[in-house]
Amino acid sequence: MNDIISQKKDACSPIYGFSNEMNQTPSISDPSVDIFLYDLYSGLGKSEQDISSDRRRFWNRIYDENYIEQNLEAFKKKERDFSNYIELLDSQIKPFDAPLDGYYYPVKLGDTLALQINCTGRNNDPDREQNSTAQRFIELQKFVRIIDNHTTKTPAQLGQSWLFLGQIDSATQDTKEIEKIAESCYKHLEITKKINWKQDLIGRGIYQEAYFYELEQPDIILDGENRTHHLLICLFPQYKTQTEIEKIIGDLYPDFMALFHYRSKILWVCEQSRTIKTTLKGASEDIKNMVENISKRLENSQLDLKHLQKDLGNALEMSRLCGTHLSYFQEYLMNLEINRKNYQNRLQWMRDRDNSTLCDLKFFETFANSTQYKTDQIEMDYKVLNEAIKPLNSFIQTIEGIIAIERIQNERTLNNTIAIAGVGISVASLIASTIGQEESRIIIKQFVTIPEESISSFLQISLILFPLAMSIFLGIISAVLTSFLLRFFKK
Image (cartoon, rainbow, N blue to C red; front, side, top):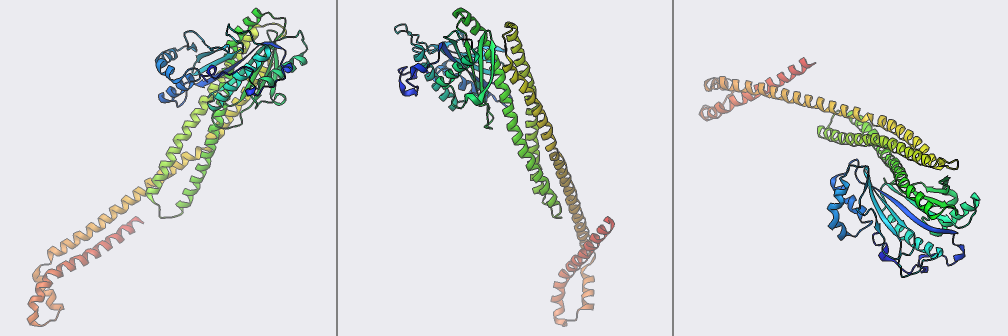
């Protein structure tokens, strides 16, 4: 987008798809178009690497990569100011090059990087004559196309708003006629083809005797970004002088910068809450499945301790993620309330500046009122989802209890085995040590009848094996008896 002017072509070229029927050009003088873009600079879960990437992304809307690299430290120093409103350029604006007349105006609004891009379509080359209104509409359309293509590829994270300004050529004060002129401006500029005038015109109003028309198409894509299409058309009556209009616009720009910011932030928070709601609903289904699976496995007497430990690890990780998302919910609720109040305060500021009976900003108030509904909805979602993941804590406690019991049983079994084996070995060792060779010889002679000539060799072998066999046999008997006694006393 920083190459808007370098991409210039002949202003009257039909390549931009504008109708050659110049007689249909809206009866407007001094038309101009602005877009306000908002990117989240810092916030929940943002690392320093994320902030650095977002910073470059923001400045790429204005400058090329080489210029950003050379001036990155200067940009960062500006951002370190703790003020809520910081102009990020020493010269305040970066003007367009010829042939288009306009500028970039970057500012930092708390945790947000904001950019206003203005274009009047007016030729600022002194060597050329001033373009007609029809030609300027074509130039404005060119500007709109380039910006729209860029923001489609690299959308503003928090959101964006379009603004059209112009002065009615005729002396008409008929509101229906003026609305037709506003609709004609919308159709000629094609600011966004996704907006339909009849369906998406959400409000009309008057401020400083200028006529306002607001159009909006809500975001229907759940992707964590606010992609709502928003356009405000402002038409000044013919009797207003150029000086008066410039004064009003000078006051309105800061108002719009703030209002659109709060508006984008509110819609972004709602988008984030819907994303988290979807995630937590999925987690609640996983929790339900985990509880059902462990119930079935508990019916099996043979439990795998390693499998249980794996289940516990998965449950603890899920608990951590759910806790993080629920804390985001609470943060978003506070964020929503703060931005709603700021939005209302800015509206009151505008009313105080125009205390005439004609002033009508109810269409702006409608959005503020709808924010309260959004807050109530998020609070309800938070309560429901918080209850939905509570079984996870019970699941974790259950698994931890089962693992503890299994460990105790395994340790007890091991101890019993060691005790039984110890008794058997002790008895076998005692018997082996008490039965000597002479005792073995007597026992063997009494129970074994063999030829005399073979007795010596047989005895030599038996004197070795008999005590060993007897000790092993009696050791086994002792171990079995010990095992029986342990089970008996356990009962």
